[in-house]
Length: 265
Image 1 (cartoon, rainbow, N blue to C red):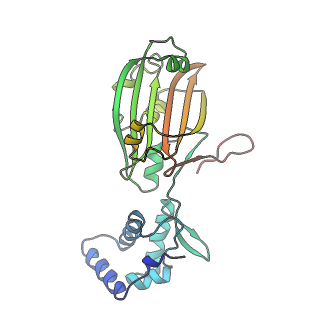
Image 2 (cartoon, helix red, strand yellow; image 1 turned 90 degrees about the vertical axis):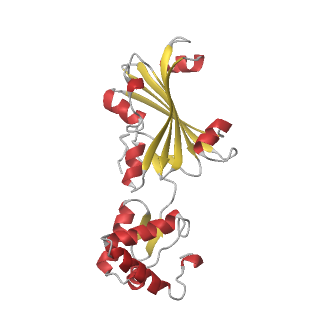
Image 3 (spheres, rainbow, N blue to C red; image 1 turned 180 degrees about the horizontal axis):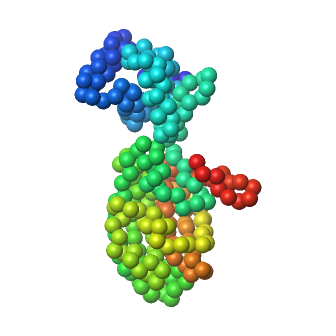
């Protein structure tokens, strides 16, 4: 049901129409104004995941727009993943926990932008370090061997969604440390430049360390999903990465065919 606080108070329709007409003079298309209005209500928490939006008829009356304009705005919001439309029932705020494909190396930047949201990568460090026993074992190297190390925080609309902690075998990707990962995330660069033929994914439920909680801007006691991924080319390890997601903001999942191939979309 529509949340009580989203009901229109006396005079709200007149105010909304006036606001739309004022903004229209600035050249913004009417359907885009409605999209922005709905998106802002979702963003500020007025409408939450599962809440029913006003009907098309109600939006037509509230904003003085045509049904075609309202329908286009709702259709594009649905395509961006902001709302879900149920035939004969109405439109609802979509689940605010985006899902990443568990069986493939998905582009987080692409996934976020496809939802109509802003993506940013905050690069914490890119360096060359000596491999610990654990890292050396994962990359098939000797303890103390030189490896590349990067730490990035991936953000959606300014909110930290993933802390990426990666180690890379320099013999497989010698140019890794010279890249600008604020413009192209490490996984995208690696997929583009190294032809891997094996991949391993392991998911654990963990609690963040104090430093991880600080970088993810979350409470210390909140649970996280930890996706650990390794890739190989001709049985030679390329990289090991630990992707830490706040459990309240993200989920991992996949749908596959019976032949084992993932279904995109």
